[in-house]
Image: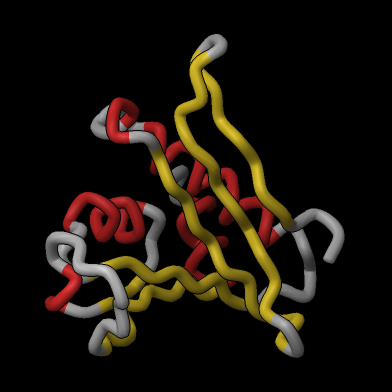
Length: 126
């Protein structure tokens, strides 16, 4: 879908991570937003900065009615990023990880942002 995709971030020549706004197959009204940052890039505000651009990019498509994201329940930093975007926690589920990573047993959480909420946030200057 035009306007959606993946973006890489750099600080000078150093790769800091990637962000995405992606479509869901068969669901043109929904976009997913995601990101992954290098550990050296954590705590610098880059996740929220890039994720905010991705949400705006998704809602620039008139057919997008809502944006979804998920993270591990234990990733409190990512959960804060999603909440700062105005997203609301809508679901929790058990993880199906094949590789043990710290916190994987706590499961996954889903977040959602509706277009109307995004527009209201823009009117308030968020």
